[in-house]
Length: 360
Image 1 (cartoon, helix red, strand yellow):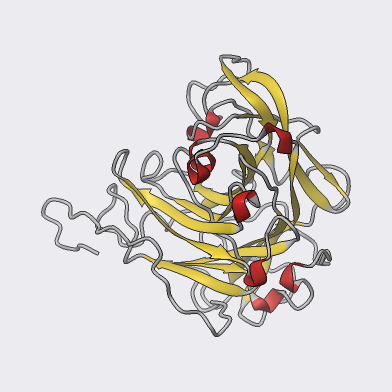
Image 2 (image 1 turned 180 degrees about the vertical axis):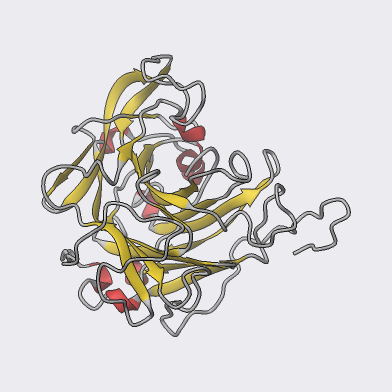
C-alpha cells in the first residue's frame, strides 16, 4: 500500500487453522519462543517443530504484554499521504498503536496534525519537519532492519476495521531497493481492504506491484469474499502469503484463492532475470490508512467522519520458512485441495529490452 493505488492479499492455510478456523474470536497462542530478528540469508533456525508442509517458524510476534516490541517493529512518522493522497499522518503515539489483551491495536483518530511531508527513507526526511499535514492520525509499523526475509510464509490473524475511508493493510516492501525506486523493486500486498460494510463491501485483495517507473508501473491481483456472506470486519480471520522462487500464493482461513508466477511479473531494471523483482529480501508492514484515491474511487465518496475512530486488531504475525529447500523456498506449498486458478486482472505482457529475446 505504498506510492500508488494498491491492493493487498489476505490469507491462511488449513495446516494452522484447526484451532482458529472460520473467523471465530478465539486467540491461538504459539508457545514457542519468538526470535527478535531473522536473517534473509542465513538458513532458518526453527523456533518450533516444522509444520506438516515443512514450513518452520522463524520469527513472530504474539503481542503479549503491554508494550510494542521495539526490537521487532519501528514506527514510520510522516504526513506523506502514503503516495495515494491519504488523509492521515502516521505517528508514534500510544493513542494510535498499543498492545493490550494479547492484541496489537492500530487506531485511526480524527485529529488535525502536522509532520514530515516525505517518507521516512527519503533523503530529504527530517523528523522536525512540519510542512506536511493530515486530518487524521494513525500508525504504520514495519520490521525493516529487524526482520527481512527472502521467501517464506507470512501470516497474520486479524479483525479489520470498517466504514467509508478505512484502509487496513498487511504488506511487504523491499529492504534494499536493489532494482530501483518503487515499483521497480516490487511490492507484495498480503492483504488490503477498503470501506468494509459500506454498501455491502466485504472484499479483501491480494496484489503485486512491479514493472517500470510511472506511468509504466503494473499491478495484478485478485479480490476474495468470505463464504456465507461473512464480513472480515466482524471477526478474526487468518491471512497468509506463501512466497517461493518464481511463485507467490494467497490464502484466507486455509482457502488458497490466488497464485501469481514469474511468467506475469517483471521489472524493467532486470529484464534478463525472470524472478526479479521478487528475489530479494522484503520486510513486513502493518498500517491503517484513512481515505485516499482507492477508498474514494470504490464508491465515489470521500471519508465518513462519523465512523471514526476505527481500530485494526492484530492477534499475531508469524513468519515461516521452508526446510525442504531454504534457498528457493520451494517444496512446502500449502493447498486446500480445491484451488482453481483464476488469473484475476489480465497480466500485462513483459516488455522486451533491446537485443533481449527472453520475453516472459
